Picture 1 (spheres, rainbow, N blue to C red):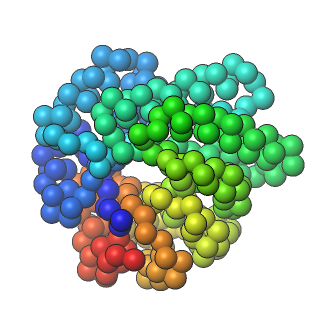
Picture 2: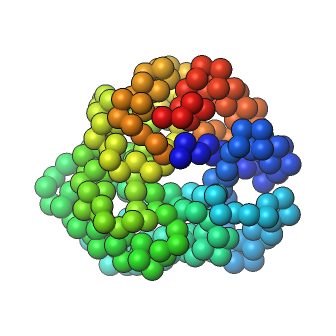
Length: 263
């Protein structure tokens, strides 16, 4: 695999297409997670039609699904319902566009480690995503660590859903890098389940989404870990704007860092 992804700029699509062509990159759309877009079918269609002017084949592309306040594991039935509706809306958009997959967040409160909360999170997510993955069998579902402080619960969920062929982990390496848990632990623990990744740079304290190489993350160490644990996933360079994306891709290529050098 090793497919590179970038986020297309809807206001500057021609340069996004050009950069994607230069690096053989696919697109991960970042337009459809916003509540005002999810509430407006006409706006959704306008965005899709706009991209379709520049894109004849969406089958390699992915998108970020709804994540603001999404809590499919809530004890509140009304919150579970609207969270379910938003996830389904995201996947319906992906299906309509013919996208490869959709990225969602775990929704875990990372610092909350009570047994009851973790048990409920796991059980409700297993039930929900087993059903949803079967309903949207043509789309991949990637679960991303966000506020998770360790990879253990995401790994437990992924192991429980191991036989669900279109479910996998999206390791956000930059999110992992700002936790107290070592990056090697994140990669080692999630390695069997990683199907997609997000990378960008930061100061190891805050999620800054800087261009790759413009922060304190050790990218040589990242590349070593990818090879050590035999990760062969697609990778989104999760920075916005042509210049930051080009700077990131050039840095990865110049320094022979995955995915510009295949695992």
